[in-house]
Length: 202
Length: 99
Image (tube, rainbow over the protein chains, first blue to last red):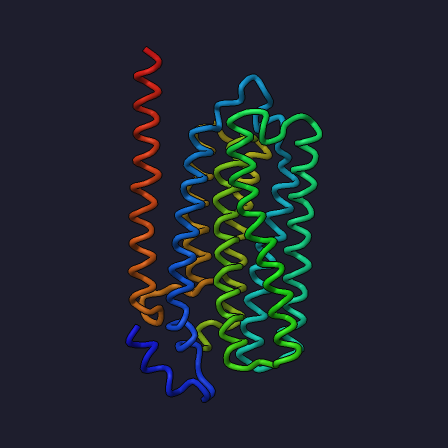
């Protein structure tokens, strides 16, 4: 907190990356609490995974290619967001907007694949009401998908701010926190394919 | 700022691709017995999370503020307690109920 107070007088001056990182402590704490939510959903899934109640298991429902494609989209989008962050440090508004757009398209592709997978499962009678395993699956993977969807909304809003307000100090500071959020979601996805999809298809 | 240049993201991306490709290939090809594949999946996941923290979130021991590192370490302890403790309880209950 002291670091924040001392940073206030320099608020209007151009600044380096370090100040943004110090300012993000509150957002970092939010991410840590989010990590706790995900960890508990992973734990619930791990306990419920065998409770199929006579219904289908992951082996019958999951598709390795779909999971690999989702993984690729999210990983590339994390990298392109990194390029957007770098472009904002370089002060190039058009480069920031272009990379944000690429990130948005990749993230939207991920959500499209996920919704298609969910609808396919529900149509096949394997919705969240079918078994404890499926309740836990939809809760865990759906929570992640909801996060990504809100991240997409956030990218749109911040893209508008970059477009209309320019790369001001508050906007680049928000861009930094959105980056933390987006990279964090990719980490959560590493957990999902390692706990849900790959063991389910083994 | 140079520390977090394009190279950081590209190195992170390549490492993440390798650490993703290995477990996906093992599951795709059934190249190893399931129990050993599970160990590889777990090891690759832990390594990949460290890669993401280092190369995408730029967590390190020099420029990352100490409060952020402490929060991260505290969360890691909490997660181990909550997840490990819950599994301990549930597995113990399961084995007692099965008798």
